[in-house]
Length: 328
Image 1 (cartoon, rainbow, N blue to C red):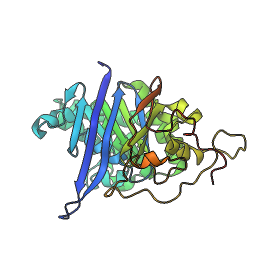
Image 2 (cartoon, rainbow, N blue to C red):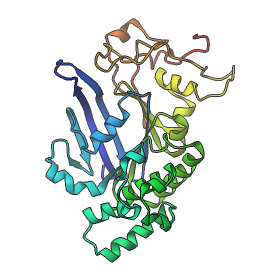
Image 3 (tube, rainbow, N blue to C red):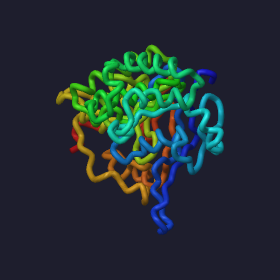
Image 4 (cartoon, one colour):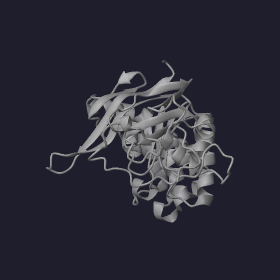
């Protein structure tokens, strides 16, 4: 337990829809944990609740129900004045670096800002650390006196990463940190993140819709659907032996065509249901090719299939959770 830096218990987040009395059910009973030095990847379709989880565990938005533990401390309902000193230990890298940075500030001041806010250091030490941080993220110190408009998207994301690691945090949430970048730039950012995970003891929550990116950097992967974690599994196990039909459908889109493959390419029918009006029973039953009548009324509990491998599906034990190749 001492190695666990982040843990949630039955985390729920709902957003009210105007004055209608209805709610967007963004996160629905999520249990997760991240250890020091570990990268938990979180993958799912747009609207699955990934970003909301990232913001909620950092208390950028407050949970509706459930608990959030950071470094063994319950921060669920902690007043903001007590959360504020913890900010140096939990940081976030956002998807869009252009909107995450003040366009009027110089890059050097942007990188130095967390140091000035959270650490009691001299101006000269702050300047030295700023230059070291720029070098750590492979950003030329020539850029420190420029404004963000002079930098490319990849360079701006390096500035965001430098800000995130400035105070040596214990937890870093990365919300689609490469999705807005060109493919050639993504590779460099992922390589940088791989180096940083080795250098630091921080835990990482890496959020992405792209399984290829998740595979490169994660130790474990949580598959999210309509605010539920339907499968949590070691990385290699997900790509070799996924257990939940939704995980299989996501993975099938990334597999080369092979008539002898265990899984076939599958395009799910229909759209993801509205989070305002969630399906009864299993949240995936409206799109699942192997759903049973019971799936419409019974919400399956997460079950451990093998060490560190959990899945929520009523068909785990009858062998029919695997989508056959003849499903159209």
